[in-house]
Image (tube, rainbow, N blue to C red; front, side, top):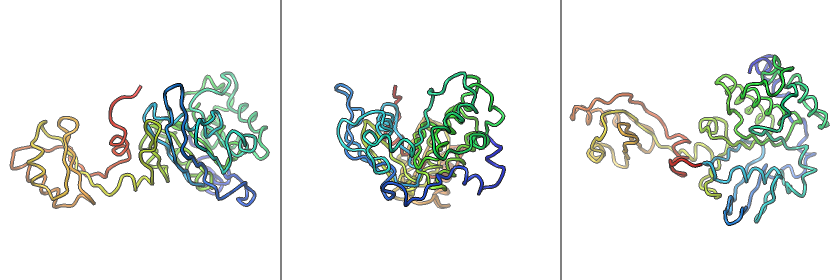
Length: 335
């Protein structure tokens, strides 16, 4: 995914994805990108969304995270106007996504994870067709170059790799210069080079003032790209904030050793307010408020040396968004 993503310089790239709309001409330009208040959606006796309230700020990347069955897809489909809420209110760019669908469609881009593109249509023809539905579209050829598909312009959709199909879906979502774009698992199936180039494009969208709602199971992606994160489970909001606010100021010291070390004895040798656990067997994690300092490192290695324990793969880390996600939603598999 190179070509246009590198050629021409940063200014040209930002101009390519810019909405080109004066904020003063937009309806309610100060409204959040998405505002959800008390949303409930039931299917029979099951509440897929159960009193959800969250806000996605304008001009920012907001990641909505949750395990399978948490209510993410239903919430996003309601925001996109494909489903009606059972209770509560949803506003997108200050408007009702169902009642004001005609006004919203030109201003919102939607990237589907799969499907929706005719299998036999070439990539270039598909973007040209979409461009005709917009009053100020991006140039299809330039957009293909930007997402690294210029060499595959005449390739039918069904012949593209999974990652290439994802990039074409991303191009389709932004061709109309949307003010808000919904990205569903945007880098699924991509190789590392394409993934990083897609992250760069999302950063360009944000820099151009485009609001982005991102759903992903890739926690590194969410932590890297997002200004704000909302974690939902069982249809309810369980945490929200910036990645830094959610991960906090917890330092971690990790090492491997023989399974079954005496955790209580280890804790007694550490500074107050430290925490230690073994998970999984033979993998040890020590957490402290603030950064890991030399005194903590010395205390751990001295404790190991006194007991003849060889600590390997010792590393210092900070708590990640994935750590927070698992703490809040559990580690059990969801179907």
